Length: 492
Ligand code: ADP
Image: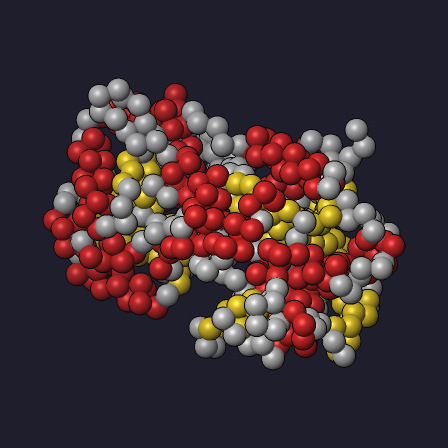
């Protein structure tokens, strides 16, 4: 079969720029597709934070000083390229100085709020992506878009480029990684990003409760859609709590919507080969894991206690992630014999909560309120338990990393957490973690209590760890499912 030409477009890609799981996916899925002999290229914005020297970005003559016009405004775009690490996957970095020469990706550090021109920034990037493809003379079969940031591409193809021979055979896929982020802006922005009036009338494709909603338009214009776990696909089409107002729109596209679980990039996330952790280990050399716990405790100013479980948390500090449950039962938690190490940034209210908790219980709680990849790896390797009590979780990656590192997950049964973690059953000995169903603090506390109790039985604990470490969530299976999706849309 001739390889498919797949253009994967994402606002963040590991290792170049990352705020969350999308970046991990964008850095790994294209490599898995390339290994399946597909012709895949990645497009992203060239942010100021990207270290061009370290990643050896090279100029592309054809992409020098490209003029791109959106509405009446013309800007100069420069395209550079590099490979995704250990692969032959080309990544194109589009440099639009006015929009991307900023410290952060989406949030203005001065205000703590989203940049006011995020709509223009990513609309411009989307249009520049299409122009770049033309200049490269590389006609994709599929443009694979992700999240609201690139959700305008299907619309532009069906409007601005509808008579363009170049894109005549190009189909679009839009992956929904998290419906909580929809790209909502004032309706007045529509003109600036070339969405004509008829599309923002009440009830029209881009209108949503009197606002401009880019993800809604993306969902309606993309040829096919997917989300990042089977359970989440089911939840968002049936339950208003998960659908964020999109249940009906998604239900109308149900036959074009599938759930495909994200994979894990085991090149980056395996205790056998992880160069970011002090002591490598594997399921048959599990004793060595304790060395990482020692270093983890030391770096976090906690006393190392072999028999007291360390609970790790690595997360964006957002409402989605279940921190209100922790807040509700903080006193009860602190009465238990355990230690907690948190790594995360986000909402000020959670920063304050964890700061207060660590101040009150310095022997039990350590905080790292920042983004720190090395510490994330150390927590995965050194902690005994990993806590992820999410209110909703489209896929979640850390629980899968935790399985691989023998760090037993305690999770709420929702979305991808429900699809990847099986509750431990003391009778049968089956299970890879401890789960709870209802979004209630007491339920979470029960699951943590069960985990802590089980931790004291070393034999049983080791069995649970090993079962988890042997699970395989590599990209191969998921990439095959993406291939089926691409083939389905090509046949449309
Ligand atoms: P989400 O995409 O909702 O943030 P995921 O679990 O899918 O959640 O992915 C989060 C990714 O971001 C993981 O790779 C996790 O290790 C990483 N991460 C989150 N917060 C931090 C942080 N403060 N420092 C380092 N890595 C982080």
